[in-house]
Image (cartoon, rainbow, N blue to C red):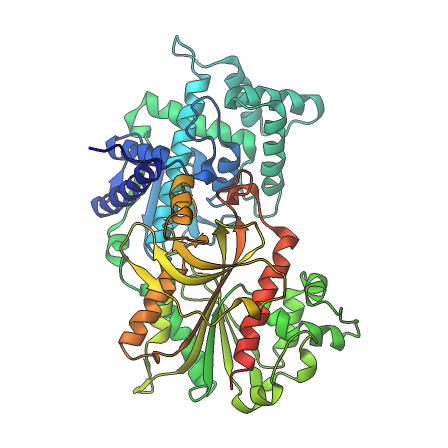
Length: 562
């Protein structure tokens, strides 16, 4: 048999991780230290995600990957030995503390010091994400344990010093802090400077009001101590459980059905049944700032910058004020109550005044006032959840004993994605979506084109790879998608799932075959370049131009349809 290439081995490992995860969900539990957990760990090491950097190096702890994971997992996860994944549970009458990670919208509850429960509302992609992060943490925890244990079975002096700091509950300062960081650097195999930078990043989030993590000292100690406890007693081994209610929920659009019903009920109650509806998947600030930002500044006698992106920069911190202003002119914010964690906005363009719009926006205002389209902006979905919510949103519904079908004219998807052919901040236009690890590929008749965007801005057009998860990115696999006949320009998590739902709705007759579809992504990272993965941090102000350029183009398409 011919030897497999690196990309083939990585793709096989990704498939193995998914298949084993699916099997464990059906089984109901597993232990990361057991055979199944070991198989997951080996698969993760083989496809060696770019976001986890030096995870496969047994000599050092992967710090950027650890920061990335801890920002997306609940505080205290590092020391837990019992983790429950369940479906909708009513914890309202319990004393359990609800906790939300810094950078991932997921529900979790601290049941005890050693037990955390995740309420899964966003489908399989959320489960894969959690299992990937837990597998990574277990690999790094085992590395810590290996570093601190002596040949005679005891632990090293550096570990005892770390234990003293953590148990004292007193934050070291000055010389004591320098010594503590140096001590920690010995344990994790990193330089003093690398360790200090990591300390600063953890400390910033640790000091925020919601206390998003326990700090790097307590995190490393918790990870290592958990493995030491495991080795003492099998009863203390980390165990991950999947409840029967979760198993029954998979494949059923429980939360998406509730979510879509709430949105459609608002449209029905506000008599938008006969109006053209334009669905836009985007963030919760760009469309409202674009349509009301200039008007808000005029209202407060503030000069509107000639440059659109300059205007956006001046109002970035005024979301609540702009929402309040916009609410008088056709804007409604629909806070999610379905537990899907997807808020929505409805904009009645009949109430928008010409003076609201920035001078750089091209708009056929007479047409806009004549047709009075309604724009429904939905927040970012998470992976396969995109299929559930779009599938439910596009299907007819029943109100007052009548079947109701809305007149959906266009669907626009603005997302952030990894780029394979350019740099962070560039824009990608999808010509198709290739679902990684499946035979499912979808041609996109994209209504967005090069000439729609600002002249000279870097635009890349081609297939987009829809990946299993942000943490499951392998450089060799992505390089293969980019350089082979696929000629993929980027990777993302939701586009293929949205397109699958759109295709299904067309087949079922819920929406017309010639519906306008628009896909544009701005590059938040470049997994093929060192230092440009998602673990390297957010884009910050660099994301303003591509985000608002795409938003402007989408609105201009809606406002100028003849």
